[in-house]
Length: 372
Image (tube, rainbow, N blue to C red; front, side):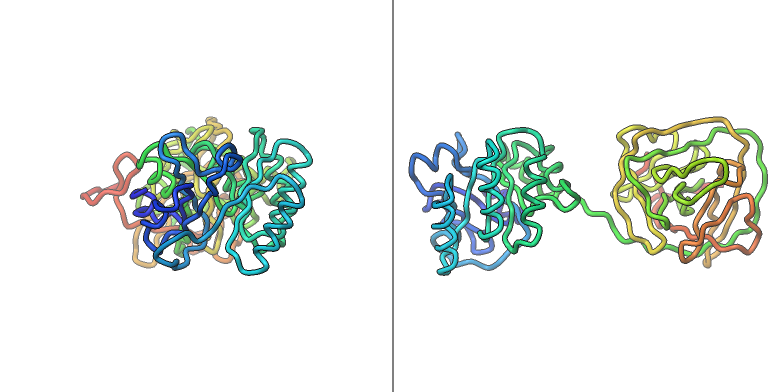
């Protein structure tokens, strides 16, 4: 309970009204009625503590005593209608439904359309029923909260149909799991401030190994990944989203660079391209600096002729990139302009990112480090 408050979980669900009364007003206190039916199926009744941490976006100030929301189970349309009627009179209510078949699935869709909070437990592990409810309640003003068994399922639920459930209801087994949930909810990617890099020179450096990164996502036309020979600077390498002669587009792929290169991932951490493989998470970066996580499905290393591109930033910092020496390998310029690496000339402008941190095993560190 203390961990849930400290981690700023939105609410706590319990059948113990006195316990809820001890919580600070920053926490939404959800009371489960103490009746046999509710105890049998409603979330919030853990075998050991009787409590659950709930998370959804709203964080309103609450009265100091009592509960804020009453969570009641509904199994029929009449029971749902009664809950909706209470909501219309201003009574703070939430509905709980156990989805086990088509009838209860349709009932959950109806609840999501009329209730301020609809808490759903899905008996089957497939996320298809959740997708159906999310689609049905797309225009609804209420919040959809999904019961999950663990942190891994929570991560999946938040990504279903790209928008995910508005919240999850979770029984933590320890305070550590509460804090882990908080970290999961904060796992956003930053907006990056990209820089304009000016090409100094391009030279053929001979045969070497380069890495193609195939992700599990489609890239937008102005997206790619950041790659560089030095940890202090990266060039925005274009995906194969744009048409090429003699071969189809592969909008999931970036012909990224030589295997020694760094690529920037989430949490300000770098990986060598040689380390990237199936399951690795990288940052897709747009020409305007927006970012998102993408999962690598496969990395392909092959020997190819290589080309070194040397650039400098406005502050004179050197940013270098070694890529396959081939016309169809591309980088992005200001405004998302697509540039073929073999046609680059001194003075051309590329998009890149300047890092302020030195690196040790991919992590930022404040130490002296010179890369040449």
